[in-house]
Amino acid sequence: MKWRNSLSLKLALMFALVSTCLLGGIGFYLNYSLQRELVWRDDQSLLGRLEHIEALLSESDSVTELRRRPQLYANMLGNQDSLLWVLDDSGTALISVNPGQLPLPTLSQSEYSQLGFDDDK
Image (cartoon, rainbow, N blue to C red; front, side):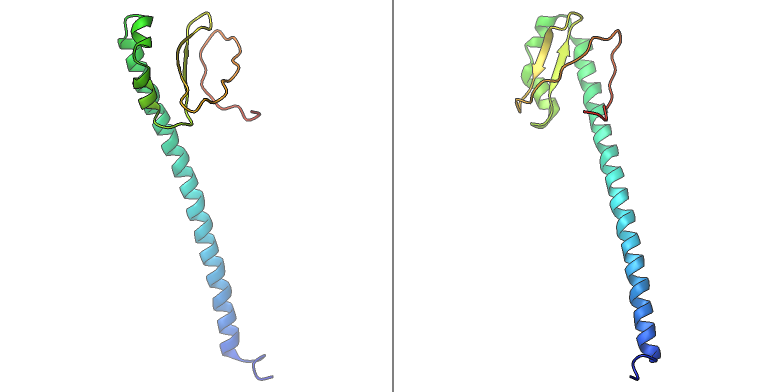
């Protein structure tokens, strides 16, 4: 029964408790920081793709010229989980690049373009 009143046992338990709390806190902070960094990098990558596509669209003089380069758009997307769908005012697809054959979303008519994330879908 000498262990119950032992100073070394109490110090070891306190050290273990403090170490566990400290390492758990550091792990939580690093995980949170990594998630934020990955989201930020994904956003920057998407913005870069949008700028490249916007430049290509503004440099093209006609719709037929846009349609002649589907592989260029597919290369700019960079993976199978992305799709590019450029529509005209009537809703007709000018460019449709869908390497992963993902189901196309249904779009509602709008007077202006809007990019965003819908939490419900």
